[in-house]
Length: 374
Image (tube, rainbow, N blue to C red; front, side, top):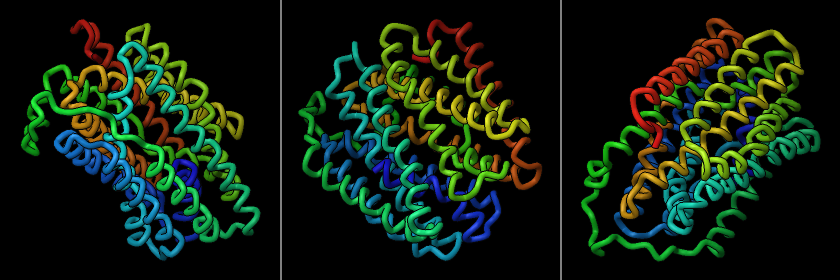
């Protein structure tokens, strides 16, 4: 599914700004609204998964909806149709996200959870790494006809649903008393440490807008629409290189220290991308962006798994993805407005400032509390 989805993701900035002729703020709105939608879906599916004591049906529903959404992209003629396609795709992602991560937490001993989520993050990134290369190859093959490439990219999405149907097993996890909980009680039952962790996740997401702006930055400095997906190749290389090592390291060190390192890397990456430094600087900045993701995303997932009780595990993951998605929506919309008004350099410099604020607040929390990120 990542192979399919990331082909669309790699070509959407060019499709939106070149094929459809829309402004950068449209890219920020479409990406931000789509990701926020996925977050609402994760909030609901996580709670429903815990309430029904089932994981696999929600995973299958998510993969199936995402596969069905893919043919909507090549027939889109404007922003509304494209947002509808992206909306359906991200709802599918949202539905499967929390139950999928809950399966991993259900089946993994606590002492190796960091490695488990690091491995999941790394395998996600393999598909995301191959996808931009496939997008470039297909763009050459189909003479830069983005719509034709979108039709081909629907095939691996359908295959992913069939694989999930055949291979995913329902874990033997039940609520302690075997009774079904009221729908909304689970959110109220989240304890103070979990709520604190969710607050930190929200703060981090405000400092990070959609990686589509990395592609837009590549277009901004003169990279062609056909080669612009290489920005995601560099991003995913940085991500893949550190995803598993960071997860494994969190099994031995304080996850908060790894998060601080990740946010520090994001500050440096944004400062670099905010300068007029050519293709070499662009590649280095994007690699660092990917490295920051490796040092934060899997770490947060592992910490949620550690902090959540068994009967609220998917609910906790849903809440985490919800607050992160809302933060990403705000950040992406702000990035789009800044880009249209002041250009790409100012967008990334503003991102560096937001990341620095998040880093400072996390550091202050660390001084006032024993382990605020747990």
